[in-house]
Image (cartoon, rainbow, N blue to C red; front, top):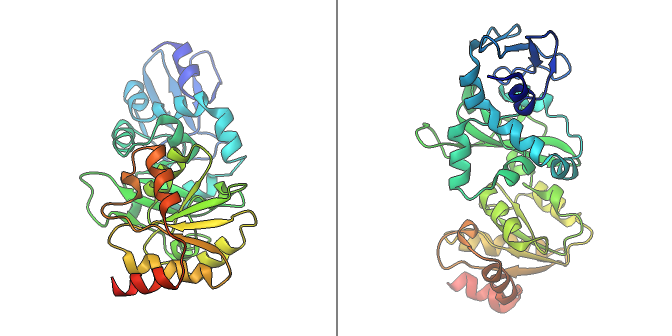
Length: 302
């Protein structure tokens, strides 16, 4: 491997003519005091922090994607997550700090995420502990990671989504609204169940509508209070999965009690992630009725 390739792929520095120093993508050591040495001449690597070693080509195959993507859209990342310190976040779940391997990238692509979205949403890959081999989504509030969610990839045992215990993070999943940090100047917010749903809403709206996720079917009180504090939101549209009819109505009522304008979008089938175009999203939001006594009674009676 050529020396110029190392500079293009990894974010580090040359310490000798033959040794390139980077933060270890395997143990996630400190970016300010990196420990992994790369030797492109010999084609090997070694981390003096965790002892990881092997062929440099394999390291590139497993970890280079994230570095390339990070550099290619660095300006957008800076705008989206301005100087968030992910060191503590990566240490908590012992995961790779800045890269995804090929399998993880393929899985996210299959779920509809682009390379730019993967970087913007700062998706990571856990390799150890109870989050092992899950793609991990940080939840950001006021430019700080307060919680995270791990989605298993194909072939991994356990539940689809896994969240940290209360003592492992600042806020629990039921206290956090995914993507709430992106609301800012949006006047319409679509409330969904899952992270991929919220990302799809954001993707299709092209800036006009913001998608957020409850990490489940229920709108919990801490989440409700955070939504109520959004100063510029004029309309909430509750768009949970098609099997969450009563939960949709309940969440809408919770918001309307505080005088918020709330629309109810009952999907006939599927989930918000299945919406395929900007026009379809706009139609569903525009045609959804506002909560009133008629929609409430109709929802109760089915």
